[in-house]
Length: 212
Image 1 (cartoon, rainbow, N blue to C red):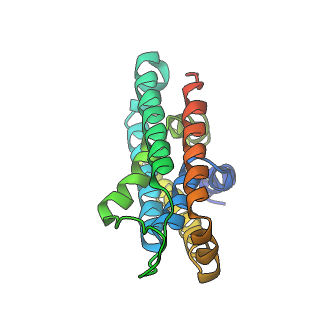
Image 2: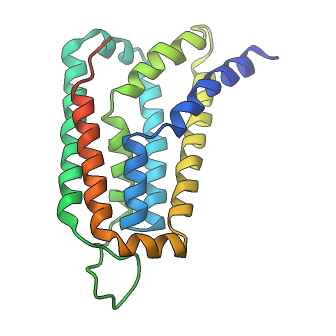
């Protein structure tokens, strides 16, 4: 097997577990699907995947190593993520009941969401999470040789991002089928409250994370 293919296979063998493990990104995409529908969830999925390339870029440039060795920089990123997740959680609590593209419903409809906001929610949820920094530093940087060209590394990242997007898009399609949508609408208020609690819980969990 070509060394580059072996590197890619090795990194993907680990990364696939990171994809399916529930986290803040999963909670964000699920809420987008439940509250704002398929298009918003897909845009958020693309935002999450694109943010992965952002993490890869500064890791390749060496900034990730600097962040991992600087308690101050780590804490800045960590607390920005904590504030963001708790803010989203509070907004979810305040949202109340929703409907998904069903006109003339007696239940309050979710406010329309722009494509930019849908994308940004996914991008920021991932970008403000310090865990990807240490994933690339502890796993990616260990498996991938320093001699591997940057272009090849970006190729690895593109495959990872594509798989991440595909996973969340598949989740978005499943969660917005008519039967699932009807169930979500009946439980709209509790969906918002539950997702709000999840975001706040992830924010509090992130607050306990330590560098190293």
